[in-house]
Image 1 (cartoon, rainbow, N blue to C red):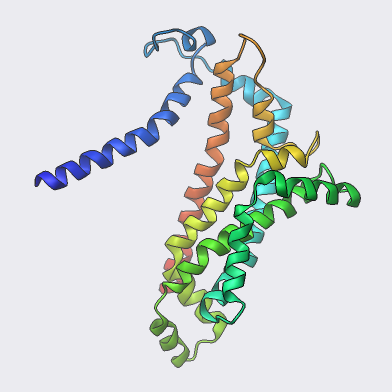
Image 2: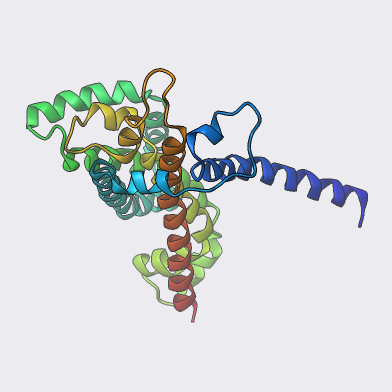
Length: 270
């Protein structure tokens, strides 16, 4: 093996280890008692316990927060896909004098700090009587997912060769068929990343969810933050278990999404 390739693989393996190690360490701590976590010397040999995970799963507030997060984030991502992908394709393939302004506006939505968005929306939802409801969270999260998916999908559609789409038009395909049968399969990898990133973004959203909910619409990040205590009695094992619970849905979503898209586009090609 060449030295350059060996160094490259070593650096890649080291970077992968650094990315995965915090997750593994968190999962390991979720199986420890609190006394095994707060020791000065980390304990790699310990008696595992499922008490932390059982405590998390057994709390009604956690299950309600998980339900709210799944519904709000799932519906928001679905709305972002249904509205964001066609809008991104139209901007990428049918540019006009407003195309640059549209891209800048979509990108500018990510420039604003969350508090600048949350406060006006909180006032709006209070006046409409929808404060602390899943409907308010879904609409608010949809603004984020649509902007993120459009922002990432426009370059993905621009990278699709125009010659392929023109050949499809010559073969008798309409605009919808070209979008569904040509553009989406070719840009599938980038679009999968865009959808997954938008889901993770709204799933981990804390400040907006905190300001738009008080009791009924609390999401899982808010409930997890409430598990901590002041002083020296911080339940580190429970907190690590809550982090594991927070991390599982995005990973499962990414796996299911990738498998679904691969199967759909494989059928389209055949």
